Image (cartoon, rainbow, N blue to C red; front, side, top):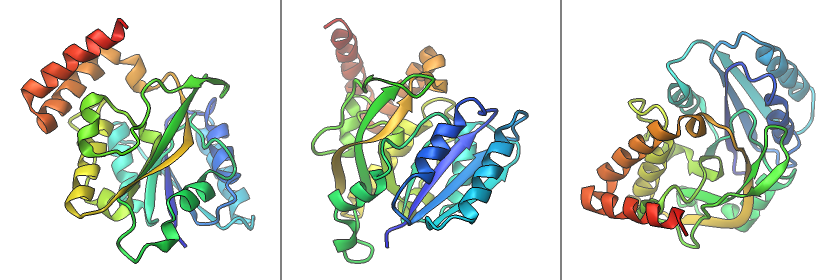
Length: 260
């Protein structure tokens, strides 16, 4: 059975965490490892996740919950801790406030990508899909503006982050060797996704489009709140991967597109 490692990063997340935990707990798919990496929260976050773990331990859903709580050096440092611990075949980062759309999301990903039909070590390097945007209460607002292309490659992100981080499932063996670059405060996820896709291409692995909504993303995240700084970082990420001239040309297009 293909196993998924779902990593949830938390810090003082008591107000938004429960729907994330509920969406994972409700998954009918049994091969789930849920890693909760907490940055030493001072509110009721740890009490919530401890209760969640207790409920999981006595259930028969086949899920395993692991909790780690200690100070960190930012969200990407915490994500690297999750990478280090992950033991599933695929890893996805579903942070506090974000959620899986239905109880069948993981089952459908396995089905649509035919993951059980691949020979060992030939499974796709990345599984990806669409994202819906929800408000702070988890209510649907609209589909994410940027949509995944039919065929995704590492070059696709020249046009922006076409796949939301929460809708990007990386093969764990590749992800473990592609740690987040903690020099970036807001855009290490963009850089990480590109590097994972580049390594997948180098290994001759496909990227599977699930053609379904695989994540609900809460609108107000750290990057949204620090939009200007994030844009500067994303420019640097794109420059490193695609070259300066291409990056300048694409940013001119981004400006033109924003007025259309």
